[in-house]
Every structure is written in structure tokens, then in C-alpha cells.
Image 1 (tube, rainbow, N blue to C red):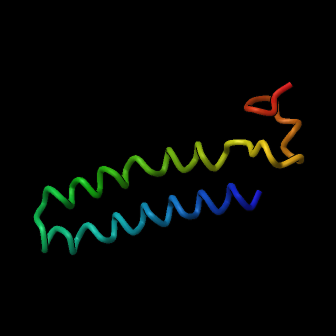
Image 2 (tube, helix red, strand yellow):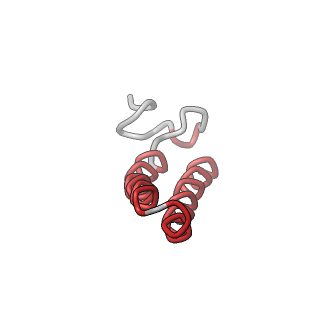
Image 3 (tube, rainbow, N blue to C red):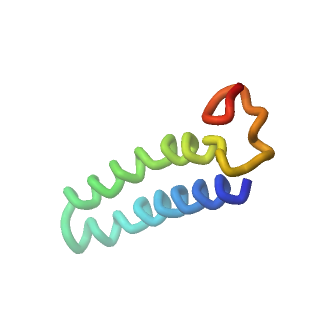
Length: 72
């Protein structure tokens, strides 16, 4: 469980940094770079949810899942 929470937190933290950092990047480097940062930040939350909900094959407590690598 810790692995999943840690990965999700890192991805969402990266998303927030990209969104917050796009304003200074706009003033320093232009609108194109800021829009690119926001576009990358827009893609991260769905990926974070998918990665955060993936079963850990090394965790014996997740062996009874219906779907995923530990499915029967």
C-alpha cells in the first residue's frame, strides 16, 4: 500500500509543480513553454490514478484481486 501512495503522491506533486511553475516560465521563456508544461500536467492525473490503483505483485495482501497480475 505504501508503494502505491508514494507513487501517486510523487506524480500529483509533479503535476502541481508544473502548473505552478508555468507562470514564471511564461514570463521568462514565453507562452509556448508554459502551454507545453500545462499540457504535460494535464496528462499526469489520469496516469497517476492508473499507476496508483495498479496491484503490487510483491505484496501478498493484494493476491486476491479480481483483475490484474494477481488474478486467479
